[in-house]
Length: 141
Ligand code: CA2
Image (cartoon, rainbow, N blue to C red):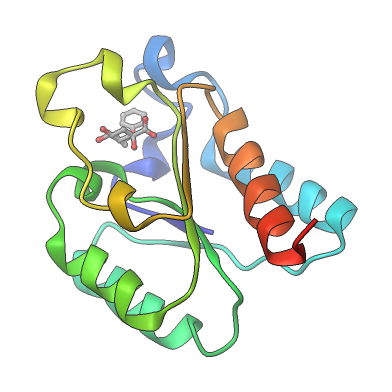
């Protein structure tokens, strides 16, 4: 699970957009779901684009795929897209909010065209749905 910039603020501001759960709450739910699904989950958060790129490159050697909420980098980062394409691991893009219903600059994602799938608008359930989708695809069920 890759959390991009500012997601550590979850549960502290803008609850009308992002809900009241903290990032630690989200990670707990993801860990519980991973255990139910019988998969190992590793979680990483950074506010720094280069650190996200380094993580993708290094983690690719030990993971089968990624769930990614790239935060604001979704709409700006050719470099993150290139990194994810470069490591040739499937990834699911997730967003808490319905980005299509928000400001026009959030309508474009550099990641969506190269993602396995995209889940947005379900609050923090988007993460859980994204993990389920990734595991289902990897299991070929
Ligand atoms: O809806 C999402 O999950 C977003 O990826 C969240 C990003 C935003 O830039 C994307 O357009 C959509 C923002 C992450 C910052 O999260 C905050 C959480 C609580 C309070 C303030 C920011």
